[in-house]
Length: 308
Image 1: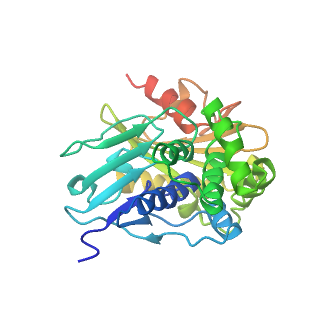
Image 2 (image 1 turned 90 degrees about the vertical axis):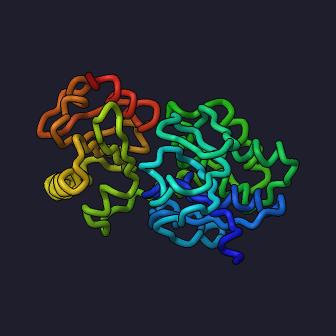
Image 3 (image 1 turned 135 degrees about the vertical axis):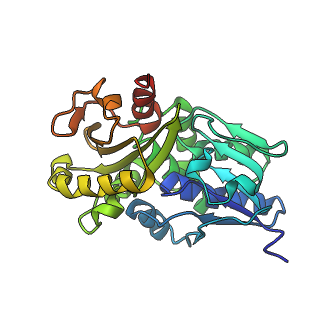
């Protein structure tokens, strides 16, 4: 009976640090407000996220693969059903907290929705704590900082706002953490991909979109050496081709982002590679994108604007 009355809080599939941290932070807030909630996750933790939870000695949420019809849920760091849990269409969505575009989001009843164009869901959650007069403890502040450092690439991403920077300063004081020192350690921890198989590599941080009938995936990994990743291009392309066939995709865009220099390299496959080629000339299925680091603000708009 307790499970039936519980509200599950989760981020998107193939979760990143912001998605996992925000689920735990939101669950902490709702629990302090007297609600029966549980933070869960829809995928495995990447190395960056593992580093954050281990560093602060916090237990990560358990894994689920679907939600039952009529389950109460809170969605954080996403709103598109294609990126959410299996069964989300039949769940009772109670709240949404996000910083992405709003798309493919429908609810059966009125819902509390807090969405802002900031760099991280962690930034929005800080405001929610203040709105509800709930104190932020040291561990919660540390997770919020991890969210902001990850999603803004330590304030280098064009998605980063002055709000993210202002709130990060406040969280540093609560957590007793230097975000630049800790954040760089965390980001670097996520770049060791040597033991990750290509099939897993392309799904570490992959999001599916459907725009005007065009179904595509934009996947992104962070590294300190694009060249090291490109040594695996043939195997990466084989994995991408399999995914295209399996999920009937029109385009799979794999983005390799250099966190130190703030540039990316694209690998694009599928029948609609023209959606990339129109903006960045592809050679050998690849294109260098100087100054491009944000899927939300740079890569996705680039693809969608090229759709006929």
